[in-house]
Image 1 (cartoon, rainbow, N blue to C red):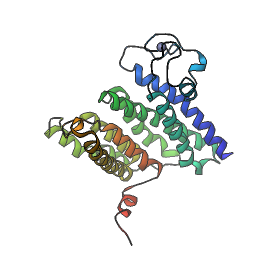
Image 2 (cartoon, helix red, strand yellow; image 1 turned 30 degrees about the vertical axis):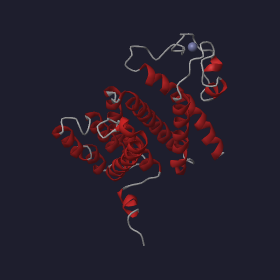
Image 3 (tube, rainbow, N blue to C red; image 1 turned 90 degrees about the vertical axis):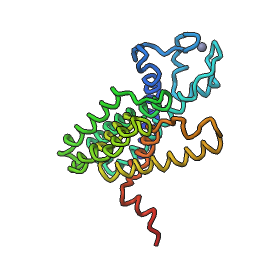
Image 4 (cartoon, protein in one colour; image 1 turned 120 degrees about the vertical axis):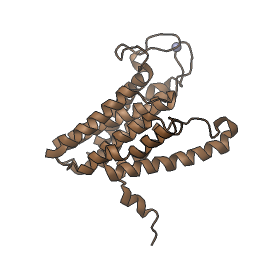
Length: 265
Ligand SMILES: [Zn+2]
């Protein structure tokens, strides 16, 4: 039963991921989210069997059926990532499984939040900008959830409220003093949202993890890409923050757990 739930939620995740791809591609282009998907090169509308998440990409060999243009690998990757993150949410909140209502409300809330974060991460990776509208929705919902969950299983703490303000504060100062050169304001807003969403301990852990990840990837890029990605090149930081948040959130890593890494017996 448990594995069936995980499997079904994974399938649901790939379908939602398919929709998130549409949001990522059409956001800020003036196109609506409705209407059948079409090939961006030959404009042919896609048949139903070309719209099955992951499977269609594999069966078409990653190419459009008529014009043979390569389909971006972003499509199956976002679909699989969404499926995986949704299944991880099931295991993260499996303790609530016997209480269907509580379990479903947790699942739906976090599915919505992670869908937003996936779109923000991929959009930032592609365009090096964090879409404001999506960011404000994330911050607002995370902030509201602190009050709504008071009657339920999560006890909102004043520290969670503080987290959304305190965590981004030093980085807002860096943004201001460097005039946006060392840190974008989009990243500052993202940190605020993650602070409200994860709370103080997990929020700080997420930011620390993202800096470590960023450092490792930065060093690897300098080694393997030579001068193309020098020190000056701008690698968007948003995706790192979101991966850091994913690790901290899914494995319940707070400051205490992070500190334990450095204390060997
Ligand atoms: Zn085509």
